[in-house]
Image (tube, rainbow, N blue to C red; front, side):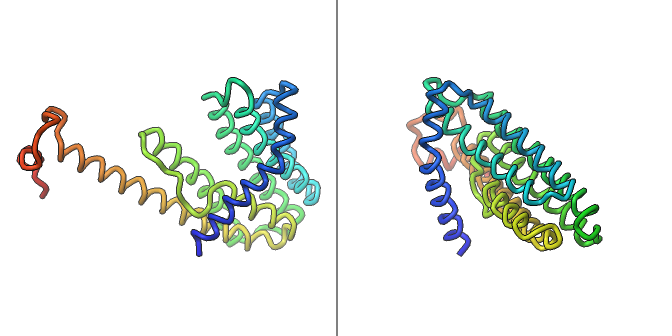
Length: 233
């Protein structure tokens, strides 16, 4: 069921990109820099947090959708430009995503406190767990890829989280605790999935490095490799 949901989400993202592709082509032809779109999305995210803090939930939803649109466009514009996406652009995009989520959660905390019926201890717990899992989902992938390991798995990447946040803003601040609970559960499951995935890769890599030592000749037979392998305890 979770895999089917992930496939549906991927298909939805592909359809959205097909819809926004003409706009991406126009922006690329006009010379709009992908990094400029990333910055615009970050400004829109800051406005999302500010609107939430002021209790203007419909306005915050509009700004959030604008921010997500910029996030969708910047990658496509980068791919359509002759130079293609840059290393700095990818770094800036990921960093901007984390800052955007910080703006969102900060605005949600203030808005719920001032305009959404106050803060209940369970709501605060869900908020903390949702925030930390959102950052850890991204961190685990970045750290794994920094070690040369793949980590593109999990049931709740940023796209899934943003869909839930949009739904939360549509419903309103008073029901936000339920959505934060779901975000927390899905986020921490994803963190666990990524830790397990990276561990399996690391163990396999370590096993392979012991099975065939770097100094062994390439033509060694299977019996020779077994003799050279470090015995497992």
